[in-house]
Every structure is written in structure tokens, then in C-alpha cells.
Length: 510
Ligand code: SF4
Ligand code: SF4
View 1 (cartoon, rainbow, N blue to C red):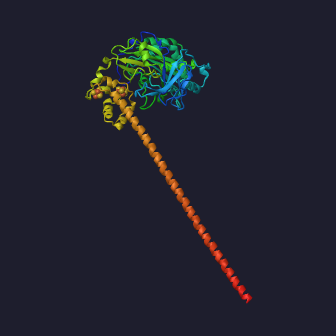
View 2 (cartoon, protein in one colour; view 1 turned 90 degrees about the vertical axis):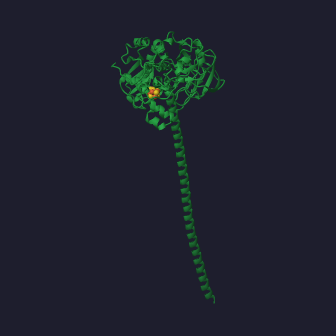
């Protein structure tokens, strides 16, 4: 492979990864209850297709979808559906989500699975459909439906990039997957390459993961279409745009996608999930999750069923330390704070980070911006974070738009270096949600205006039609009156004639 490139900004952060990689991945087992959310992906939520009291089998679909941007949800183990209710969601909003609660029967009995034909003989559209039916989404944290990424309409994909950078501190689930199950990733890569009709595949891994690199390289030696590429350790090199830049030197356009450069980027764990779905007919019902941080006694990686309460994983990891005080799903830079450890594992849960007060001591001392420009130097997207901060504070949504807020990947580099400890990313998330709200309101008011205009037009049309009918009737009446007059005149003429004739007769009789 040709030389690598660099992206602007970024930070070299302490990894804190070794604390969770000393033990192999362990199976978390079947919990007492599974809480399976129907909305675990970007797009429309799945609709529940099971009823309270129903017995379900492992792998059975419990949530179906009709909208395009959506994937179904499956039962992670066999058991009884004991309820369908709202439950805390693993989402930044923390708003409750519809959840199917299953009491496992302990048999872990699979739905009957049909063996598939050789996948390389299947049409790419059939593969995509199977990947969709298996509920596969991006497992790097974004949870975007994978079948859509594998449908590059109008593009000839040159390269599929499998992202094994895992650049955020503490998270090690992809590292452990690459070390222990490299064949799953490569088998998934074969399927995804076929679905995309892509020329080559690059698996990009940060160079601080030598075991993972060796493990994949050992299988890749005979595959001329596959390149295992080590990349420098710099945060956020695992961001799609940054990874594309590092590997190709090309810039994904603002508000664009790698697809615009005929590239597709997917996570290594997603490739493994694709392999399990198509080679073993196993829908996405489990994932590897790192349970780590200074607030948990024995950090490690678990293979956990979707729907497992986070509290169960904490127990399996030796429980909380005495001073544990914060739960984050994801890493310290881009993760979201969870309100409760009853929150279940979802498809996007790559890490559960347990923090102590020492981990976030600086957050309480936010001071005014001193315009030092440090945030600008580290922004990997070349934004002006301090400007965005002012616009967010003053709710200047137009300013946020013109300064490309939506290009912000929320990497948190600016917040980390800010000497005033301003929680910049929180302001940007707020700015984005306000902009979305405004856009929704505009769409709503546009629709209301369209409806009013359509109603006005309809009423005007009806009025015009009535007027025309009235005019036609009046014309008809007028025509009728003329005719009546003509008839009356004719009758009068006839009468006059008769009278005249009668007069003539009188004359004859005299
Ligand atoms: S780093 Fe902080 S203090 Fe410095 S310019 Fe940016 S927001 Fe202001
Ligand atoms: S959070 Fe946004 S503004 Fe801040 S450094 Fe990252 S991309 Fe730039």
C-alpha cells in the first residue's frame, strides 16, 4: 500500500486499554430477564409482532419493519414475553423506548434455521436482503442499517474499508474481536465485498494493537484483495472521514459520505456480524462490549446478549468500586451518560465505562472563553469551535449553519484542550438539536402552509364551479324564459288567428 496521510488536528490520548484486555472475551450468559428495545438503529423503530404471554424462540423476529431505513429486532434467547412497555433507553435523550421484556426459559432454543446456498453464488441484492433481515447495523456505535451501506446505487466501489482503529480511550471490544476471532471478520469481509462488488478491502488498525494486526495478517497472507493496514495512533483516526483521509489522502466532502469517493467504511465487528448472519443464520442478538473504567473492579470484555441489563455486566466484572459515580455508554470522548444501570445492552453498546469523581473533576470549573484558539488547533474538521460555542450560547442557528456545525463529529478534542474547561461538545449537541427542532418546525409550518394553500385553492375552485353552475342555470332559465315568451307569442298568434277565423265564419252565417 502507498504511504499514509494525515488529517488536521487530533490528539494523542492515553489509551487505558490494557486494563480490559488482559482476560479473554467471556460470555455473559443468559440474564434473568432480557429487555429488548424496538428502536436500536438509526431510522424508524421496529413494530412489535409478539404478544404478552407468547413463547418465543432464540432468533425469532419480535419487531418487524416496513420503512426503508430500519431493520428488524430478534429474540436473543427462548422464553416468554412477559411484557411490552416503556423502559430507559441507551440514548442521549434518555427518553423511554418501547421494550419487549422476555423471561428466558433457560433452554436457549433456536428457531429452526435453514442452511443457505454458497453466498458467492447469490445476487448482491439477495445478500443485502438477508443482511437486513438479520437486523445488522453498524456496530462501531452509529447503528446505521448495514444493508443500506452495502447498496451503493450509482457507484462502483473501489475499496471497502473495515475500521478496526478503535481510537477512543478505554474501548477494546474490536481489539479483542480481531485478536480472538479474525476469521469471522475476514469471512464477513468476503460477503460484504461480494455485496458491494468492491475491488479490494483494507482492514485499518491502530498500530498500538499488534496482536490484532498479527492475528488478521496470518489469515490475510493468501488473499490478494485484502490489505491489513496499521495506522498511526491519533484520536479520532477511527472517524470515517479521518480514516479515509489517512488511507487515501482524499477529503470526504462537507455533508457528504465516503460513498462520494466510491468508498464504503464499515466496522470490523459489523463484518463479523455479517458472517454470523449469512454463514450461520444467526441474526444480530449479541455483541462484544467492553466493561471498564476506574469505577469497576475487574474490567474486561463480554459477549453479551442484546437486552442484558448493564447492571448484570457490572456484577460479572466484579461490581462497582466504592467511588464509582458515573456510567457512560461508549468512551469518555464521545459516549453518552446513562441515567441507570438498568439500561439494557443494545446493538450500539460497544463499551460501558464506569467513572469515579477523579475522572471528571475538571467539569465543575468551567470559566469564560479567553479566545486562546487551542480548540481550533485540534479540530480534525477544521471548524472554529469557539465561534460555534458563541453561536450555540446565543441560539444563533443561522450562524451555526454557516459555520458548518453539522460537520462536527463530536469528537470532543476541543473540549479536552479548552483551558476554560468549557463543555463545548455539549453546546454543539444542544445547537444541533435546536437546529433539528427548528428544521422540523419549518417542515411542519411549510406543510401547514401547503395545506392552507391547498384548502384555499379548493374553496376557490368550488366557488368558481358554483358560480359557473349558477351562470349556466341562469342562462338556461333565461333561455327558458325566451322560449316561454316564444310559446306565449305563438299561442297568442294562434288565438288571434282563431279569433280572426271565427270572425270570418260569423260573417258567413249572416
Ligand atoms: S479553547 Fe476554550 S477558551 Fe480557548 S478559544 Fe476555544 S473555547 Fe475559548
Ligand atoms: S467536537 Fe466538533 S468542533 Fe470540537 S474538535 Fe471535534 S469536530 Fe471539532
